[in-house]
Length: 364
Image (cartoon, rainbow, N blue to C red; front, top):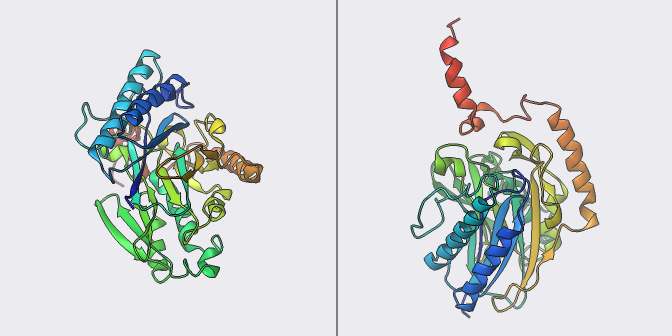
């Protein structure tokens, strides 16, 4: 059977109002553009959504990972929507579009990308996660819990198809290198790295037999642009059931709103709040950081109608906890651990302040 490729590509093309939400004209324009691509047979199916001020394109096709035509489609959609955003005078219009022209792949050009090519199973449930006001390291803890923590994922113990564990591909974002760790046997080695969420990022997860299970975007805008232009607002998706974690096991880590980097001006730690798409409109101190999840039941490459997985009262406690954590963190104001440490503020505006006064330091 020919493999299907799932491509989730996002970009911040302009916020309404400020960085808080998405103007309805932008996803409408994106749907119009992608419908033309679908009619032309370039993509099988698509879903357009948003998380905060980020435009999210979820597409299926047969082109494989890093397909130039698919990436060009996404680039053209983002450029068209950037034009709409500029006409509406939206804030940060085209913020993630760091290059003037397409050069074969949107990676390294600003947008975030998560892709996998796989053979569709008899039943193929997929959960797509999208975050706003945070960085790619936000996925490290959930992905670890989903695929390696038996207190979260009981299938690791009682499902013979999962008992052997999984292989994590980890990116060193500073050195541009990847390494693979097998769990459970290398669990401690894996944790030694992925606990440093600013540098080591879980890129993909697969079974020990090589079947792809999950992918996340690991693009860091500040490294591409050489300065702070906004948080990376990453995406991630996980295949579920039949030898992989169940839907409920994949969602469970988000019942704990763990602290992530981002929030206001990309310079603060705050709780990752699981919300419905309707509630993905961060406003308090431009936050707190949000995560949404759409579920799809793939059928011959077709996405079908999405389910808003966090539009569920069972996550009310997580949202309440996140709000309490947000109050606690905000009381620290400009002090750590709410504000990020200096090494994590390298690409913000703070170095400009430090440059102005550094000559006034005197040796002790």
